[in-house]
Amino acid sequence: MTFDSYTFLVFWLLVLGLYRLPIGWSGRKNVLLGASYIFYAAWNPPFILLLWISTVVDWFAARRMAAAEPTRRKAWLVVSLLTNLGLLAYFKYSDFVLHNLELWLAAMGVDAHFPEQNLILPIGISFYTFQTLSYTIDVYRGRMQPWHSFRDFALFVSFFPQLVAGPIVRARSLLPQFLRAPRADWNALSLGTALVILGLFQKAVLADSIFAPVADAYFAMDTLSGVQAWTASMAFAGQIFCDFAGYSTIAIGVARSLGFRIPVNFNAPYTAVGFSDFWRRWHISLSRWLRDYLYISLGGNRKGRWLTLRNLMLTMLLGGLWHGAAWTFVAWGALHGSFLVIERLTLARLDRETLEHAWVRGSMVIVTLLGVLLSWVLFRAESLSQAGSMFAVMLNPADWGSASLAAADQVAVAAFALLLGAQWLFRAHRQEAWLLRLHWVTVALGLAVMLTSILLTPSPSRAFIYFQF
Image 1 (cartoon, rainbow, N blue to C red):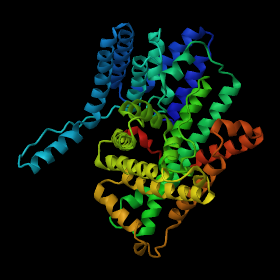
Image 2 (image 1 turned 180 degrees about the vertical axis):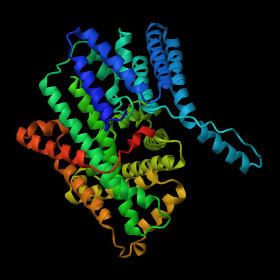
Image 3 (image 1 turned 30 degrees about the horizontal axis):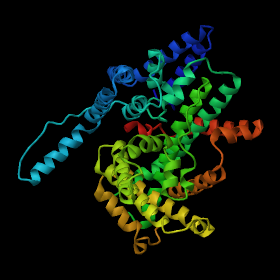
C-alpha cells in the first residue's frame, strides 16, 4: 500500500471517516493504532511481529531503566540496543557480512562457502528502529521520563504516515501530541490535502516521469561521455530529492489532516552553503539523529580537532552503511565524511569577515552542489567500478566532448535547473509557511494543475527509493 496508489487513497479516506466519529479521544487513538498496524501488515503480515518486538522491548526497557539503580540503567539500554540493532543487522546485513567474510577468507587461502540467507528486508525497519531507540536513549540520558501509556507508545512506534520511510520522529515530539485530541478541523484537512497533492506531484510527475527514465537509462549503460555522466547525476539528484521529499511531504500532509505535526525532512538542500549546511537541509531527521545519538556519543567536538574529525568520518561512514548493505553506500558515506573534514579544516583558516564575502559564499554553493552531484553517482551505481568509470569521465574535461542529448535528457536537465531555482525561491520558507502565505486562489490553481498532471502521468508508479533502506 504505497502513498501513490488508489488503495492508499481509499485507506486514508476510511481512516479520516472513522477518526471523525464521535467516539472520544481514546476511541480515536484506537482507530489510529489499528489503522497503523493494518497499513504495515499490508506489506508483509508476519513482519508486524518485529514491530511488536521493538515496541514491547523498548517499553519495558525504558520503565526498568527509570526504576533501576544507576549501575543497572546501562544494562537495560544495552537490552534495547541489542534487540533493535540485532534485528536490523540480521535482516539487512547478513548476506553482506557473509559474502565479504568469504572474500576475506579466500584472500587468506581458506575456501569457505556460507549459505545465502536471502532474507526479505522488512520495510521501514531502518526508520522505526532509529525512532524507538531515540526513546530509550532519551530515557537513559534523563531527557524524558518513561511514558505512562503503552497504547500511546505503540502508536508512536507504528504511526502510519511516517512509519516506513520517515521522517524519523522523536518521542519527545510526537508522544505529547497524544495527550489530548488535536484540532483536526477544515484548515488542517485542507492544508494536509494540499501537501499530499504537492508530494504526489513531486513523486509521480517529477521523480517517476521526468528524472527516473533518464537516470535509469544512463546508469544501465557501460560507457558514457562526460556530458552523459553529468546528466545522469543531475537526473538522479532530481529523482531522489523529488522521490524522498515527495514521500516526506505526503507523510506530513496525512499527519496534518489528522491534526498532528511531524517535522520537516527537507529544506532546499541543493542551495546549501557548504556540506555541513547540506546535512542540515537533507534528510533532516536522520542527520539530527546521527548527530545527537552517534556523533555526540562518540565525543562530538569536545575532545580536540583530530578526534572531532574522526567522529565526523565515523558518523558519515555509519550513516552510509545505514542506507544499504553495499560498499557503494559505505564509499558514499566516506566521501561525504571527507567533504566535511576538508570543509572544517579549510574554514578554520578563514576569519568570519572573509566567510561573509559574497564570492566566498557563492563559491561554497557551487562546490557543494558539484560535490553532492558526484556523491550521488556512488549512491546510485551498481558497483564501485561503475562509479569509478563515471568519475573518470566526469572529472576529465577531455571526455566531455560535444555529445548531444536526447529530448528527454534535455527536459531532465531543464527540470533540474528549475528545481534549483524553486529551492532558492523558497529557501527561507518551509512548505506549510509558503502555502499559507499565498492567496487561496493561487494555491487552488496550482494544486489543480498538479493534480491534473498526476492523473495524466503515463508512466507506471515506481517504488519509493527509500523503501529499500
